[in-house]
Amino acid sequence: MAVPETPKRIEEAKKQSKDEPQKAEQTFKDILSKGPGNSDASARDYENALMGLGQLYRDHKKIQELSDLVEHTRGELSSLPKAKTAKIVRNLLDLFHPLAGTTGIQISLTKSLITWSRQTSRSFLRQALETRLISLHLQQKEYYAALQLTSTLLKELKRLDDKLTLVEVQLLESRAYHALGNQPKARASLTSARTSAASVYTPPPLQAGLDMQSGMLHAEDGDFTTAHSYFVEALEGYAGQDAPKQATAALQYMLLCKIMDNANDEVQSLLASKHAQKFAGPQLEAMRAIANAHEHRSLAEYEAALSTWRTTLGADSFVRGHLKRLYDAMLEQNVVKVIEPFSRVEITHVAKMVGLDTLAVERKLSQMILDKKITGVLDQGEGCLIVFEEAGRDEGYDSALGTIEKLGGVVDVLFANQAALLE
Image (cartoon, rainbow, N blue to C red; front, side, top):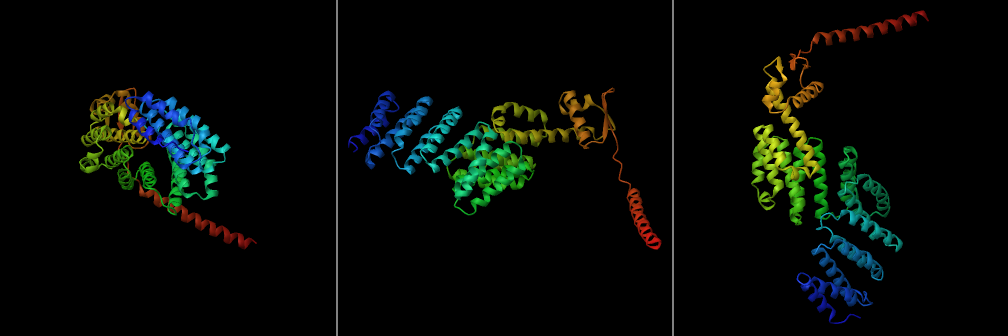
């Protein structure tokens, strides 16, 4: 039976957490030492004290103590109803989210809890923990480990017909394949997720995640208009759920789509929108610098923007990959513009005009010749590019091939007739 004073002690300890953390910690530990008890009131006090101590460790960045708390209290949680236990475990693990650099500890702790939930036959808790573990593997860029776990979990979820968890796991699978560059499988997983989502209510954050992934896959295919429309949906979803980090990423991807589509006017209007004002920060400033460099067609300005915002832009592999493609496209446009008036031009002159070193320009010219974007050859002895005029297709050859084909048909018919007469 809960002591009437216990709720008061918990409230006082929460107030002391900031200024007198040691005293508050001791109070929480005293309450937890009595266990959850047999009544609803005592179980509620135990849960409040447990969460209060967890929040104290989180606020004071005591990562190991928080991990030990989850480990040591799981035995006491076994006496609580399974649904309540799942809720408490989920809330305790959520305390790690604001703490940077804890992904490794979270993975180890989650694996331990999965083993415990399997031993105590808590199937739904185990499935929720395995879904969380897949997400943690993705954060740690352990894509093959994530896919291995996804494969076994999906079979189980399909058998149980747990649509909501199925959607979440299929979305995570799509993200893993996308990160590995396997676009066909990423699209297939996303299609499966959308099919599963059609038959169940999908919470707004999960729906926003589906829209975000759809936009990213369309962008990989070069369909930036469709990708932009999906990112708009994702932005609305995340903004409505008070998820500033994800909303900022969606807005950044929207800007990237407009830049890749050469819609510079729309970039500026997007940067002046209410969402841009609300989620203003280094990500949007970095995209502003990239947009300005792209509008001016200046490689030097583009490289300066990349150098200034290296950390911000390099943190997102999706943005980083598309900015590399954008740089290559800008370089090709500038090179073609420089060599257009010439039939023979020195590589050093091209390098001077585009503002790059000779070796980099020579390498780019070789690539463009191989890709048949330039018709010509590199004379490395003279250090120049010889450009050939593109010869038009001679239609006489096509006519000759057509005539030969018809004559072949006539010969075949004559041969068949002669063979019939000989028989």
